Image (cartoon, rainbow, N blue to C red; front, top):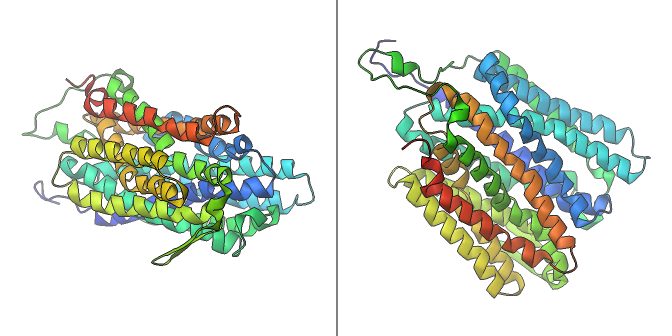
Length: 423
């Protein structure tokens, strides 16, 4: 390759897009299991949110996994992450299928622990996906590539609820779910992931060292700080992801409680294109994830024309407006208004992440781990919202209203927090 010839990262990006699809599928499948687990294991709202707590709680390991990535590289982390995901799914099958005669509380505990193992692998994959997609090409189009990868991630999130209903439940209503519905489909997912890991062992992926261009002739050398921990905007970005998780999964996590508060919603059935919804909160979730998918594909296009901060601000205001309007409406109209927020939540993750990874050079991998730690917001915020729902004096309306605090922080981070330490 000549000095002026740019490397071709197309194949590597395709691999990363497949990984992003897998991350979205597994993550949303986990969140979509809340209503099923609540009925299968006879849980309270707070107990059912432990599905999120165990899964997203694994992101507390993001920083050590990021330093592991510095040691074994992008490809090594990809392979290890896929192996851990596959092992977690297979373990889920072995534990649950071998203990179906045990108490449901015991089976539920085993299910949660196995999903924590799966989540550990997802954390590794997430740590790789974000910075790798960022550096596979010009920095100017980093946000575009991340948004496109998240669009494919959203395609997976749209498909996942159908997998729950069609494969795991075999067409049954979530209210009729039992522990026996869970094991076998998870075994198939585990085997698929392990095969993907084996294939990656034999594939060649580029090994990129961030900041290496700064040493080339004719390029001004940038002086980076001695440690990633000295960049305040990275920590602000982690907090941005923390509150973003309350936005992204706040609505789908609270939807079953919203339907429980108004049982008449269960009688509403609706056909939209290929979607047939009604009868349960889970059946409405594809509309939310479909909005996320559409928004990300649109976002991938408009990010080439408008400044990311402007787009993020517009999406935050529109998302908050959708949630606000839902309080003014009643019946299924209020549900649709909330679900519509997914269209505007769609591009927030890549934009927040991109702002947190600005001008870090050799610290990019470690910073990705720090920012990914913010995903523990998915472990804590829905659980907190579940506690609010279970409170006799508060309820699901108050829990959903908590999302306005999350929107406010994101606006501050967009225009102030992401610039701290870079000015």
